[in-house]
Length: 317
Image (cartoon, rainbow, N blue to C red; front, side):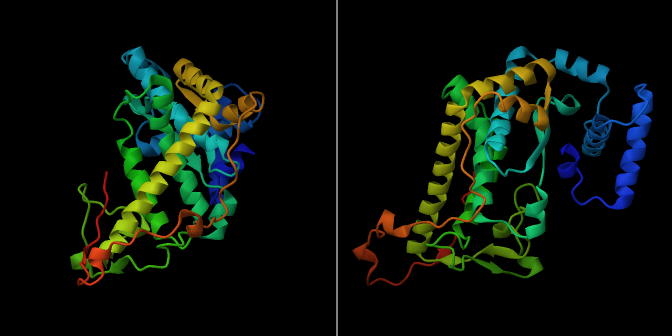
């Protein structure tokens, strides 16, 4: 079961090369046959090597010894929040492993592989976007649950990801208020804007050749309100999940503190005996009930004035 999600998209030649490397690793370990763990170890090695963070066991131990306990605990708490959020969803992307201090850097990383059925369907659902936002909230929310409101700035990348996904949800057909409104337009290559890092943001809203369209004051206000609502709703979702499963969060933190690494299978096996409070399956698209929220407030001062049209805000963190 481990290998199914780790080898999505592999060709026959890729599988053969993988098994050959696993055979070499198995011989070096003194084994008489290839085990599934040997193949998993090769997959992890290839991934870390490709990211440029592969260290020998001795080098990794030296790096860990140079990091303070408080820093390591902060990293463990933050990453454990992401891990737990992912495992509470019935159909989340499969969690391969998580590791503290990869390549000796004072950070943490988690590797997730997409489920084959999600890859085959060829599109992203509204529920999947919401699930990704909840998982992204997990790190900062875990710090709040463990340390209180005095949290670190580790979640800056998470906030940027959350905001980008929220914009996608606002313009998604799943949003009954703005989903069918054209809020983006395509431009020529010489008109395309770039972000501060000089790279295109890899989301449909900011895809190459796509820029925010002009919008009226009313639409801009509604856009901002919907964006904020999605962010706040998913944050509350994450806080509730972490609070209800605090015992599992502590288990993951402890494992990361001791071994600096935990695999998805290990988390699954331990959670089976810890009575987790799982999230509902939200992968299927859901509709926003506009009737329950009531009509939008009317501003009479705008009734007889020309429409105030201006560039849409980017809402960056």
